[in-house]
Amino acid sequence: MKKVVNALSVTGFMFFGAIQSTFAQEAVTEAKTFHQVLKQNFIDGGPGFMGIVLVALILGLAIAIERIIYLNMATTNTKKLLAEVDEALSSGGVEAAKEVCRNTKGPVASIFYQGLDRVDEGVEEAEKAVVAYGGVQMGQLEKNVSWISLFIALAPMLGFMGTVIGMIGAFNDIAVANDISPAVVAGGIKIALLTTVFGLVVAIILQIFYNYIVAKIDSIVNSMEDASISLVDLLVKFKK
Image (cartoon, rainbow, N blue to C red; front, side):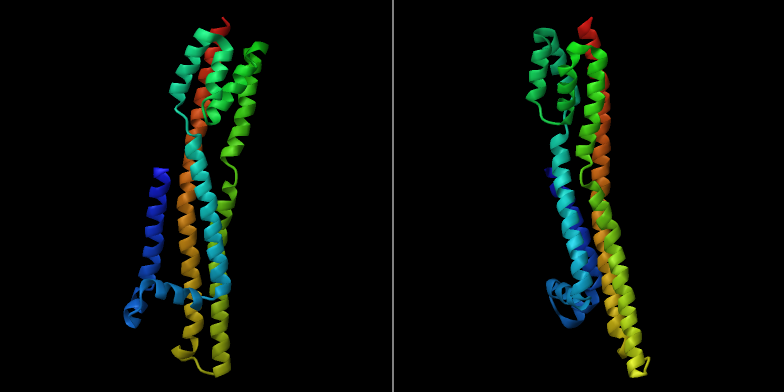
């Protein structure tokens, strides 16, 4: 949980820092607070596209936080678990080792339990069970991660779409006014820039979370594979 809080803190500072730097000049000019400037620019960007990008941020962060909590809970001290299983096999047999796995949280303990449950059918069957259930656990670790990558791609695309619409509006204003002065096109260009900035900031935030989650999954999977090989070695020694 400490890592989750740290990641959220860093991301929050990056998010608000990026937006604050973008709107700093306007805040100084109008002597408004940061939140007032942020609210005003959100409204100026257009509630339609800005709202959709905000929803993408909220959903992406919700999934990312849920995954980070799940992955932290799924992390197991595999060396300690292997030592406990080895000791249980030596002193109390398979049932004692299965009890150790039942009392330990995480995918590694679940994989161990499946292997131990099939050891009476032979080491080869136990190994097959370990491999098969390992695939199931990998699927659980990667659950919903693809949605985060979707929001990462969707946020800047929506921002760019708002940019295009803002530029179209600017050119329409030029056509209506029959004048190309800055005052005529400023509104449309402002909308274009605001939606682009917001979409990119959302994508950056979610990308940081996504990379952390993928790295965490890879770490757990590597531990699962190493521990599974060690378990098979223990079962081979036990059966002898």
